[in-house]
Image (cartoon, rainbow, N blue to C red):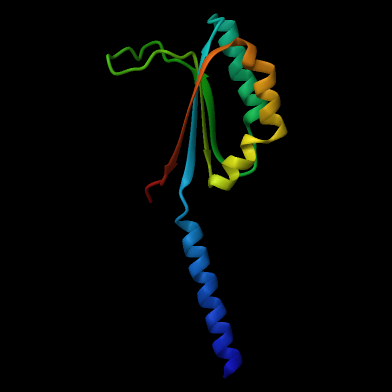
Length: 129
């Protein structure tokens, strides 16, 4: 009987831990680069560098990189950037690991000379079910 109670107690704790983990927010990491050289070739070079160095990091659930959409020119559109990087991580731990990853640091080192300004927007987000 004690063994059964112990198993039930452990089972309940594991279930509660899994539930808490499931409620942990995912992390949206959006980066907007304003380039010194704003030529189409320079923009494409940065997009390709994003693909080379910033894809397939552990804990990444979404990756996209691209250039400013020229047709989006409403008064509310911020147009003070050239290249966007959008990453979503499964949790903050995955984001933090990415932040110090060798490939991420190499991306920064190889591309920062052409950055006039970089804006980073990190947010705790929850997908709808």
